[in-house]
Every structure is written in C-alpha cells, then in structure tokens.
Amino acid sequence: MLYGICNLSIVPLRLEDSDMSEMVNQVLFGEHFEVLEKDKKWSKIKLQHDNYEGYIDNKQYEEITQDIFIKLSDGEKKYSGEFVDFITDNQNNLTTIPIGSSLPFFENNSFSINQSVFSYDGNIFNKKLPKKELVSKALLFLNSPYLWGGRTPFGIDCSGFTQMVYRLCGYDLLRDAKDQTKQGEVLSFIEESEAGDLAFFDNEEGNITHVGIIMNDYNIIHAHGKVRIDTLDHSGIYNVDSRKHTHKLRVIKKII
Image (cartoon, one colour):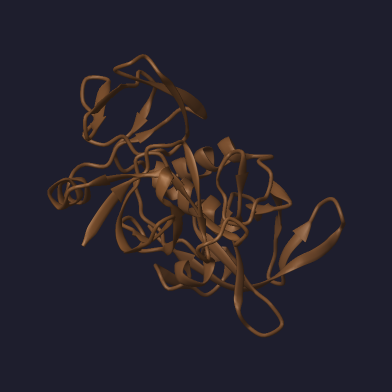
C-alpha cells in the first residue's frame, strides 16, 4: 500500500481520472491518505479523516511512509485557524493555506512534511470547543460562494461547510449530507434543537440533498448560492430574499 499527503493549498479530488472530470471534493494542505491505485498521471486515494475516495493528480501530492501515515492518523490533530495565511518552508518559499488546513506534527510554530520544514505563526485549532462555538465558526464562512465539492471560504458546498465548521470545533463529520445524516441522535421537533445541531433536507425522491447548521431564533446558516442565513420552520428553509421555501425538512440531528 502507498500513502500520500497534500503539500499544496487546495487540490481538486475528481470523480474520475481526468482533468475534465467533475470535482467531488477538495484535499486541503496537510491532509493524508491511502493511495488505492496509481498510474502514470493519476492516483485513486482514500482520505484518512473521512474515508472519501476520488482521483488526484500525481503532481499534487507527496508520498509518505506507512509509519508516518500511522503517526499522523493516531496523533493530535492541529488545524490552521486563520481565514487564509502563509506557511514558509526552509527555502523561504511561501504557500497559502486556507482555514482548517492540517499542520502535521506541529510544535513550536513549525512542522514538517518529509524533508521540508515549514513555519506557521497563526492561530491553531487543536481541541474540542463548546457546542455554542459552532455558530461563531460558521459565521466565518458567511457569504462564501457555493462550489460543488468545495471546502474553503473561496468556494464551499453545503456538507463541506458543515464538515469544516465541525472540524474547527474539534469534531469529525463525514463528507456528504447523506452520510452525515447517519451520525448523531434524531430530534423529533425543531423546538428540541439547539444552536449547532444539523438540519437535513430531501428532494422529491426522498434523497437527502442538503444540510445546514441550526442557529438561535429559528434561523439556519447553510450554503445555497452562498453561505447565508435563512429561516427554518417545520416545512423547511424559508429564503428571506425570494420569500419562498427552498428546501424541505427531513430530519434534525444532534451530533454533540
């Protein structure tokens, strides 16, 4: 088995082994993975943090040993806490990293990937935060544009948004809304929910297609066109701009 780590800021993870294939996810700096298949140009990978699979260009990651992979998987998780920031390597090259990037073996403002040593002096997230912090972290992404497969403030989809907000607070969510709905405890009524709980929405066929984070006073923050705040009621999401319901409520889940 081969293993890899992302050494670039934001790398597309594609459905198939082609630059023309749709981006289904993104790999952020410092995230590590198993390499399931590898050919001349493409590798099929499985991300360690959520087991998501897809294809990545071979030029956009570094291989690591199994020993490093295991240590990264078992070690303390530390993430960059700045909206966007720079890291500097031992040749004084700068690399931008978005909020929520992984910082492997971070200590004393430095970390390493193979032979490269990087410095980072920004804020970090490395512990579980109180549930009330979920909404404040969600607001960091407000007005970020919607992007299918995106996971950063420069473009994010609904489940990428919820996953990243929970990550910054120290909790793991799966990648897609349909999988996130399998986590946590079902709540019967909106009135039972708290700020930070997740609301899921389905389509006419009954498939889960959307997710958002519940706020106080029957509001919800979610990625729809952009990360926005709308009203939540028993029917679903009421868009405050178009003045109509846009998503049909299926279930509310208490994750923490």
